[in-house]
Image (cartoon, rainbow, N blue to C red):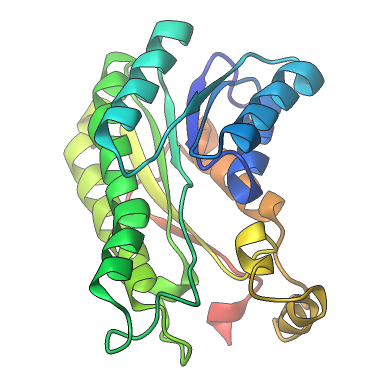
Length: 253
């Protein structure tokens, strides 16, 4: 019950890491606001939390890149549960077929990736931080990527830039709002077995990638959800502006 009496909002909670984290947060005592653009997937997550975990959950459909949607989600969270303590910005897109090198990516595709992967966290923190302040403090978890820490031959430059911005944003928020008891940290996933990756790699290809890592396996959504739980909980109360790399050892090679 590491999140007992806490209220958390998780963006992109309909699938993958977001869903895993929403369910885990609920198991650890939180009331969870599930925010996702996919109405069916988001509702499924919220229903699972209520029916299988036995915790309260609120599904709010919306697009993280649209300010009115994010504002409405924050307002509904506070109206329903009375407060807000944890912001987990997990929604994102990974478009290996459209987001390429700067000399190949169209302006439209660059802007679409930035809108979801960077504007989304901006809007969540813009509207969420005032509620964390009212609650006496809280935790913000931003999702970066090892792509923000290392260059890759197969470039995804808009994605990489957006994820790199999470580091700068976290440090700025940590310094600004630390006196209010608000912490902000980044978790950098490595290669994780999610629907986003399965759109481009077969199971055998993912297994081969995993075997090339020091820990000899591909990451699972639960690996990132567990890291996010630690950052959301009071166990990480002396951490802010920090980066947690969860990549099976990739960055060590």
